Length: 168
Image (cartoon, rainbow, N blue to C red; front, side, top):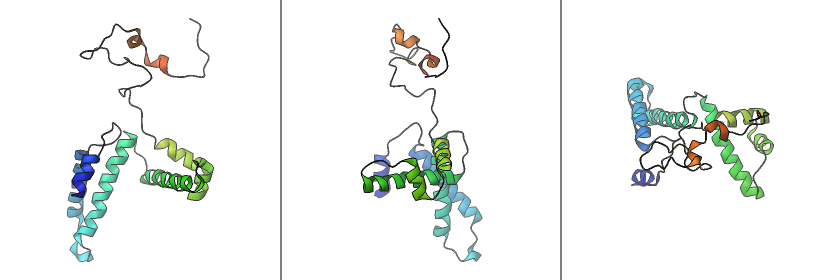
């Protein structure tokens, strides 16, 4: 069973919906398709429903990757196209292409591609683990050792800044 195998291989991530969420969105798309379907159009229901199910599942993944930000669907499509172009150019040339090279191959301007790539980056979660600081964010959890000086670090102190810093 292909679907079962894909579900077993699926790796959960904080910026990706669970399989259950994606299935629920697909069912919602199927419900919308059933409501809007009109047999007078001479379309097969399966063909018509596929569009709605695929669209709702895609929206689910897009929403998860950009959090609460609502971005146009073509931004996500452009990012997927960019990834494909980068893979192709890497196979051809043996090194990762510049953004200018990828933009030229895609037929869009460099500033537009940079804007889309920046807008579609996953949002950072303040609760996401930071591998650079062991112990940060662990205080108060069962089994944590908050006697460590590292646990006293403040998030603001870990953020890089080019601004001049005040003298202590």
